[in-house]
Length: 235
Image 1: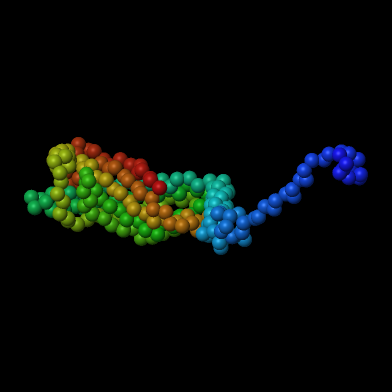
Image 2: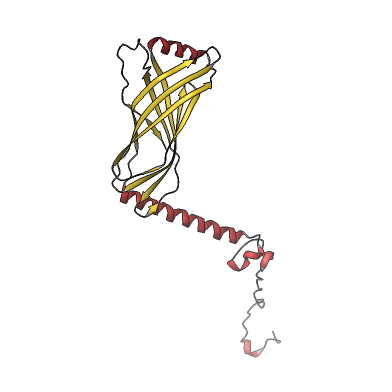
């Protein structure tokens, strides 16, 4: 005990505590991943992709909100299509499988919207019997104003080679006997909507009209007359 130092007053304080070790911070690729915007160029561009993704999400949200606002302001209603008159003067399938046809159709197109106009850039009317397309015609483009009903007429005439399957052939035999033909008119459209000064992109709705049309020269229709027919609209 004689070697004690006088200034310690005989107390024992134990071994000295070593200083804390310094923690090294990795930079660039040494850390094994992306950690900040400054490392974007050094970590496979993941930060850049993240920024682009966030921008795209933001744009999608803005476009969605704008579309919702436009819808709430204008409240668009579906356009309505009807076949108001149909006249069939020829529908004959020869032994050579050549179908000769002559069909007149009148449509009404109703735009019920108060603030929306419609550009009909293309209207193609196709005639079908069963699954077989037999003819087509085009209607001239036009613009339809607000709350407007437009009457459109077209003629599908000519001859074409048609091979009917068993079921369609039986249907045709029945239609020949009755003088009433089950014909489908399908419309292929390219339209744009006008909201004030704003014009939308092009839509391509599909219109289908299931018709029963009497043959004008037939004496077996028992006075059957064509009935106004509503068409199905698929946007």
